[in-house]
Amino acid sequence: MVKEGTEHNCVEEVDESESGGIAEEPLGGEDVWKLFVDGPWKYHEGVPCTAWAVMNKTGTVLRGSQIPGTWAAQVAELIALTEALRLAAGKRVNIYTDSWYAFGVVHDYMVDWARRGYITSSGGHVQHEQHIRDLVEAARTPAEAAVSKVAAHKKIQTPQQQGNDYADRAAKALTEQIPEGPGKVVSAIAALVSDPDSMGKLQAITREKEKEEWKQEGAIPDPDEIWRK
Image (cartoon, rainbow, N blue to C red):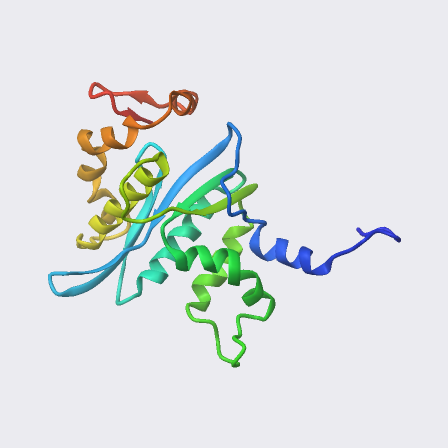
């Protein structure tokens, strides 16, 4: 409730409600989740395939699927980001993406499109409207969130770049799977996710402080020294 004499900015309130107050810079704190998303499009055996994946900081695929039909990678990126926000409902989360499109939708366009009823300045509907509506709703679910851009296809020098690379590989693997029903596509890349060499590369550059966080979350190292939960 706004009291008499209190400065009131309606635009800021609308922006906050539509975007969930998503930040560009990663959040700090011990309780922050780290998620990595990707949504590639590629030809597999002459057929265009699109998929998406959400991974956590230990390299585990939390959600992912091939998308039936012919869809652009932009749609897959939006779905991956939406699912990551839903996974983080009630939590503080940093989400990393290498998609300028998804990053731009969240930080530059989403609020304005929602305010205008998803109608463009020329009077038409926003492209991928339903997926963006879903994203707007999902943006309200975390307690606090940041969506940050990670450079794609660069020399891996940080945990964020390694996580992004691993999400990219997992999502590309999904494009090559034949869906056999709900949940089957994700399980089809279990070999990739559990490969000790790949997991080891991801975790080798992880700080000891983060490994302590994994312990607190119930993760333990297996015989190959790969942390799993």
